[in-house]
Length: 263
Image (tube, rainbow, N blue to C red; front, side, top):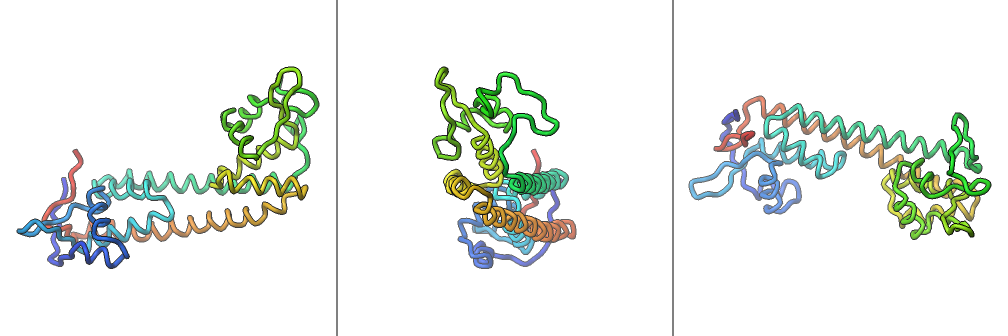
């Protein structure tokens, strides 16, 4: 059951909005979305907020850069509904995703360390029946399966110029040679890193022209910086959320109304 916490200080929507460069409508929208606790009301029906609402707004805005708007919203809704464990689970998922992205970046860097042609039998890999059409050639299905994507994704990448498979003269099937497989692997890793197709295409073209990974070094450095920024943003968001949780449990007011109930 929610608690009617007490604190006499009242804030207007414009007070919260001005403090964070927002519009008053944005503040109202955040309340309606469950990001802020329910506001109190004056005798004339005007919304009134408290320092606790200001803490909720600070926590949400601090969570967004590290977790994204949707997850930050879900975290605040869970907290305001008293479901702290669910909020912590969502935070754990974001940290797990960040760790996975770091591992992806490391995988790209390892792949670029050895940019030589891929062979049909990598160390520890067994044969792939029906995957090869001629020396070093791979069909679309096996390649898509190896990358964990759909064949339609490879066709989309082809239209964007990321891969350039040849056609088997007898069957008309797409055949990806060793260079195409490498292009597909790099495109796949960069897509996982958040790069758009139009950003990847010139990088792949430069790698082809240069015959090496140098053009990707700047992109990978930028990717690494963005991951670090997310990690720092998560720390900032955690600090503000912890402060908000402490406020809620210390008896600070949410106005005249108790927090929303879990139905």
